[in-house]
Length: 605
Image (cartoon, rainbow, N blue to C red):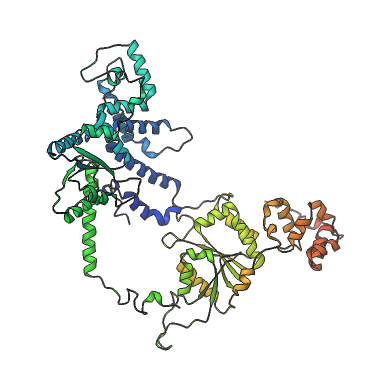
């Protein structure tokens, strides 16, 4: 659904959520270029927001760092090759140093800062409120900003002035340029224009005293506005208390609010507070850039809110609710156990199509699996769930069948860490039918790779390659692919048809006690382990006495048939292993190679 992926929604605050919601089901199928384009969209939205939120010096520094961090080995974003990117960098520089067209032939760098357009109206609004206040008590003014950075910025601007604030920011972010401009002033002098100043004139004698660059405290802000108590409320505050705004209004009963940055949620909260307190008259000031993306974003949020209410009204007018949806009666469908299969049709000839009667079945479930929804889904299908702390596997379906459940993310982590190899080895050692269940999210695509491309690499870092190696090492291991937990519960029910029920006491005792150290393959030579495991007469059970008692393969060759019989505990396997090592490779009957020769006759043309 691409109806919401429009330019109008691209500048809205919820565009990232819309894009994530649309691409989350197929995110693991996207290639690197598509993911890079999505990351570029997110970054360009932050740049668009920074144009109005940050000052010109900070914004230019951010773009300058992006350009300087580009190296030969880095993957460059596609938007850097567009003409609009050059215009963006050029205009950001002009906001700090003035227009490049006005530069004279001497090319002397001068500073001509462009202040944010909202700074001056904010000062005028606060002065207007201060003049209106005739009471002796201070009036609280809530200034609503986007984040903590903007609040600190405005405190500095209101106390020391916008021009002085930009000078301090420039000196802090560009110390080398300041030093060069100071040296150029000594060697090169020219007559300045009316709208230009040198660096020394701008910063005065504050070069040696860096401590004076810091912002003045809030107490000095109160000295400048003695009749006001200014409280900055960041929309994205780090405290995470959503009731902070309501608490401020209830405690201080403010009469003035200034929206430096617009937010629809806070507007509705102010309307609610005004409705609950009709005697308190609130005066609200709204600062917004006319004809900008900020205005369009606010109008888009208004339109989406209106459409949401209209949709709720239409749905409620035609909404039909089941009688037992409240769950008070026993007729609720979610409370019925033993539900039929998804593809099973009801036969009306069998007692009016009643729900089929299942035998007394049970599944032994590990205690740690109850954090997922699968045990509850198994219970809904009429199968008893027995919680037991299992050492091997997650679900025991029958006395011979054990299941290890893995999600896609857990599967990748287990393959990279090697934990899945140890789990598969213990399951194959203790059960006849070990199963690896790979369970996908029901809201995501049911595939490991993309639909329109396929990787042909067989490296060890590839998940598919590691799964192939796992099945090669453990041929008896079966892999189940399930699209959702609902499909898994249905699959478990099918696997238990006409099979014995597991015993929870025996399942709890299924562990490797004496040979627990044998499951750690890392202590053995991997080449020697693979060589010995492929020898005739060696299996997954009798390999451990050989590995623990043989120092090397040369030592293994010198063993007699009796020694093999003592280690393996089976005379047939011992004889097979001894013969494979000691019998001659070439038989006595010679094989003539002359019969393979073919005489070629020349053909006359």
